[in-house]
Image (tube, rainbow, N blue to C red; front, side, top):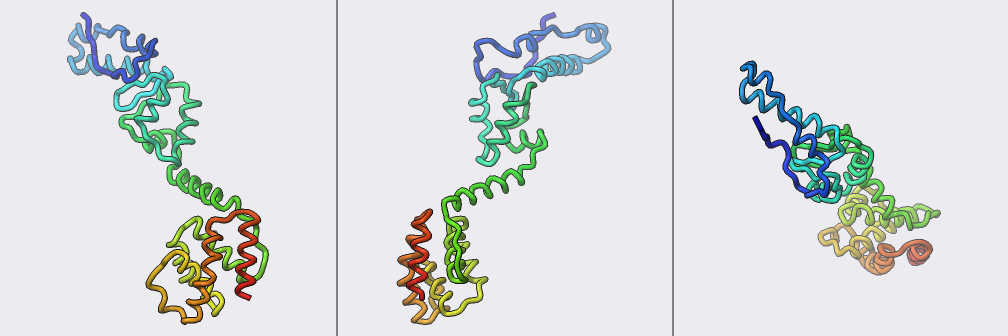
Length: 234
């Protein structure tokens, strides 16, 4: 008897098939020929025998398709998110046995190896935030300096929505209101004008020149612009 079963499909066309010996191994016919097991049980056992041997190989399999040890093709099929890539690359680097997942899901792969996906995502975005602020200097100064610096940093991390939220939560005097309006004006935010007096709006419009520069500046230039803005405020 010469029986063949479908276990995995070749998706990489390797020069030397890593799992060839596993696929071509002979089936155990003894129990089947004696009528101890059914056709289905015989085929299931044969598939398991093949997969047990494949599992010991360093190969990559998704949805029954074998990518050999071609990491690039495997990742192309997997399509991991940015915050998942580093953890997945670590798994691929150090796993010495077969990596087998039932569907092209990076989340399923990470779960299989006990990786906390939510933690990965949080750490990724925390690092992105730090990168955005990395080139900004430490600002030492009074309350207004810290207020301006804080709004400028919030914008880099959270954008327009972050600015609106921060302004809403702040208790403000006239100077802070003018500063707040300068950020709103620089971002072309409409519908908030009624909260400010004519003087606060006009002064805020004037200060928005500095705010726009703060959005782009880094290092000593950032510090210099902030100091110029503070002098203008008085």
